[in-house]
Image (cartoon, rainbow, N blue to C red; front, side, top):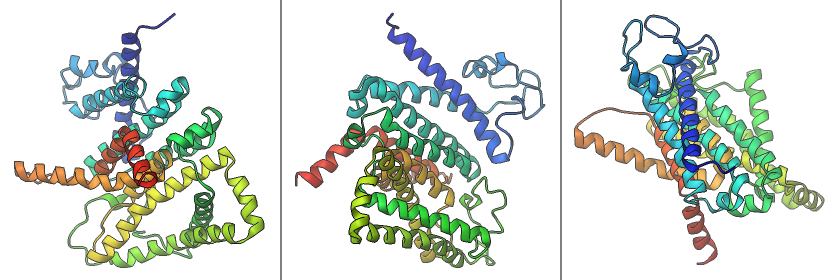
Length: 388
């Protein structure tokens, strides 16, 4: 039996709206250190439990006229916007991937392409939640980034058992490492373990340690006070550079060892190109590139201007994106993001407003753009590097 297209579209939109409803729970509860599972949804004003018929995505907000049934307290339009945005995202990405064929690799795969669709939808949903929280509170919950990172690593590692590895690599559907980038990635992973051990044992100090108490959110994303004479931001960046040194040293050492030692070179070439290993290390390399480019900007910007340039939440956000879109596309996204920042600044100047927002939403928009323009970017890179 063939399901009519309109039924499938309606179902996809409805699922997306339900996911948007769950994102609203995350947006409200996670930065306030509340469980996203229990207790059931309730009105923040009067505390009354929200019945299931008052919790239907989009519809309930409209029927209740954006007010609590009991106390008549206003319900933020954010709830409706997030549900609508996520529903449109689900159906829009489905149409673009499977009807408009904007990603030729996904179109070629047909049913197997659903894996790429789902992974991208998860990433974009995480970006919606983190951006909404960042706009409201100037923080990015790191647990959202870690979840997206785990999804990316798992998809890249085990996706080779669902999709032909040659198709994954040929169409850049998921990250996949060459022998050299695999060595860099493995070395960086070893270095990160060393850095975390040094941090845990107190051998090196955490930057802005007095501010970071929960480990769940990134208080460094908050707009900094201009009169903070007690904080030496340049010193804090030196601490972060100490944390990064083992990662850089081990990464370079692993590359040299696999290139200069003949026996190791031969073994590594075979081992690193096992599809699952190449996927795992490729995803990790995307993580390190995503984190690294933002972290370098944060460090050098802070050293240059004497105040915190970017938050660590942005570092984790781009790292999570890198595990899914890969090192090349996350690198491009970083340079696309400033254009959204400039557009926002121009809009503010035109309307004479001074609404400042954090950088996380601009990074999220840039990641969305490189996902949508996947084929165009890939064709351009092929032209520049192989047909010049």
